[in-house]
Length: 304
Ligand code: GLN
Image 1 (tube, helix red, strand yellow):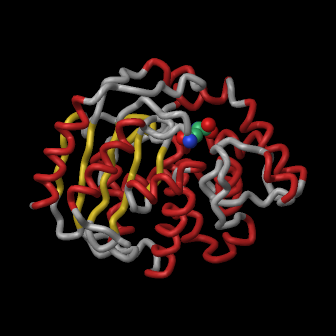
Image 2: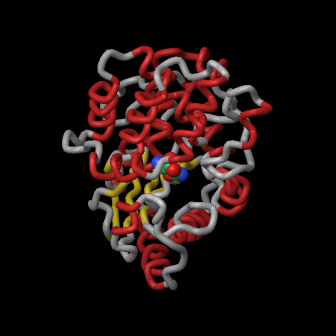
């Protein structure tokens, strides 16, 4: 595989660059992660799978889970989703409150914390066992039944989650959260605490490179149009106030998390997951961004 050769070369190069950025220490448990870990895994639509470094080590996927919860909810409510959450890039950090007042509790997009809280609320309204149903969905997508929430990380975030409490209550004050904020936050922290490795992530997200259909078993997860919309949202909103920069340098739909993971999708080609825990100022993996920039440059494949 030509992509495999490029991945190897770029991995070796980025592995040696200076480790910049900082751990997401605002969540105490994430401050304990070994910052030197670095892993990459690619899964292609022609069924090639290849990883390097710590690609088998599970880590806290944090906001990458927002894509999975959106997909899960989109399957249930369809386009009614867009009555509750917008599709515009916000240009603000992930935990910002500023636009919610003017927008009357409708978050700009589903990848902001505000938007993900609304998506969690939608799931709570439709599912009898939201945590169980969601984890089973992720396990089946990744083909890994050992994937689970981390109670330790969820509790650690909950203990200091003042902003998320504020966001949830603020949205509730506009009537745009239907369940009790306590229950919504509990589910949101569980979603963010999911632990997956790079291989799980690239396998799980590969269907978005294949028009909504799981490559290995032909299962339809989303329609072609829905799958395109998720990619469009990742392209425009996946990196918060660094989304433009990511499109400019990497040029793929993608999503980051403060655990240092990034998933990116090249439609019709591949899904790639990279993990390096230290983050730049915008909360996106420093080495992860560098790796993907170099990878898409050298592989000379582009969606543009
Ligand atoms: N759980 C994190 C939070 O709410 C998710 C943020 C992220 O990964 N960008 O702060």
